[in-house]
Image 1 (cartoon, rainbow, N blue to C red):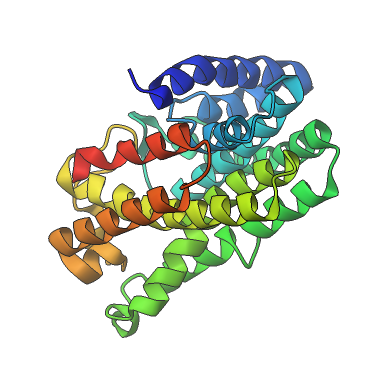
Image 2: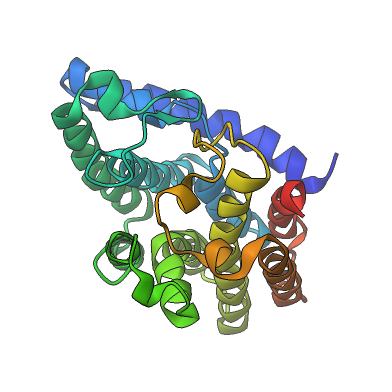
Length: 289
């Protein structure tokens, strides 16, 4: 096994256990806790918390309970975005990761409230684990109107909108905000928390930008190349629903080339760092290349 595989196999159960225990212990209403936990514990790669922990590892920072709390706070925020993204007014998905989406399981109002609860709780965990206003600033900027929410708005605005169908700059911006910002924040928070040097921070942020930009391309390719159990979406769904993205802009072959270019760039950005585990995250893309 690779260093990345060992790292993932070691820390994913730790993340899962922490999420399950603390969502049960720290939410007073058992019904709200159950609704929140349903989506948080539905599976997934735990990509963003693992990126945070792997960046700490690359910088020689010991991982203990506070660091796990920060990492899990990131996962809560990510899950909030998925619950809301699946809603009828957004992507209107019935399944995610092979299970009913939150609004299909519990009801639309309950799903909205579960997402509403996960977002501030995630920020709270990050603040408590780090005792740092800088980390709170990074995460809130990443998911706010100039980050993920802004990207989701552009995504909605561009659906069935022929005026942006061939606009590469628009699509790049939309996909970066929608997906890349939270990935970059996961790495950047770790760099700040571990007190990385200016050079280390610059390299890690460049890596995160390449990784974050490429992840949306990969995610869309998975939907086309094979039915994605992890995403729970039907093949060609984006094309059928009038979505505009890199895949619809470039097609499969050119999107794969774009993805390969980003992989090379991300690996180059890690030069001079203890980046073997971070580089291993890029192996996730092999299934679509």
